Image 1 (tube, protein in one colour):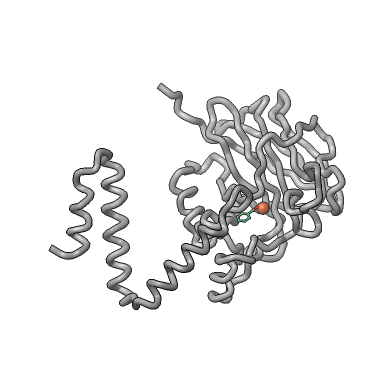
Image 2: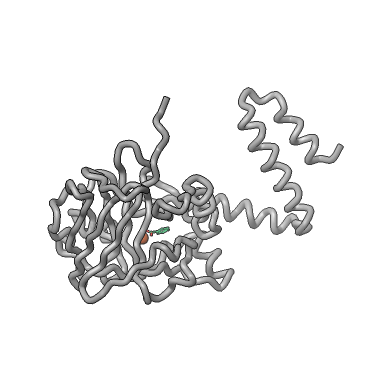
Length: 268
Ligand code: BEZ
Ligand code: FE
């Protein structure tokens, strides 16, 4: 019996079979990794120190572990495994740390920028079912960076939301709003995740995008972005969130994007 076998056996009495299965696989991969690379004690200590500091960086406003998951591609791997599109539905991507619940509501065509600096930009489109029917009354959260590459929540003295809104689709499944053109920006890189990127010679930049979270009864909630075609960093997103199907042209002061929601099976 190997050491890995012994550790795996120690989980055999777990009440939850799923927990036992997750721990079995984790232990097998962890031991195989240690053997494969011949992990030194100094490397083990450095890893413990890194993870400790990652935890110490977390508080109510910052989640360094999710950021670590993002830059390792783990967040996108989990999203891809849990949101198959079946070819029809719009692809999903990362939520990111800048989503805020209960954003202010706006009516069709209103300006959500609320003073965010940038070039005005009109964004519109539809929300549809996989068979192309309009989804009326879908609830859409939108949030984005301004022309300086910052979200409203990154301004310490700002006391109101900017370039952030809650919208609803009309009877034709249409949505529309004015905002500003989003700009590329670096993910937070002043902590352990930034150190990891520096050690790897990697950039912290994300390409310009607008976040959408779209919910409607009977459909899976869609968390995604639209990316600005031709922008910088599309091929080197720090969190591996770009999907070709989400890249769209921002022509002049206009962008359009039609979303398709995946049907959710009725809950028993
Ligand atoms: C974002 O797009 O807001 C984001 C996503 C992952 C990490 C950091 C930022
Ligand atoms: Fe973002």
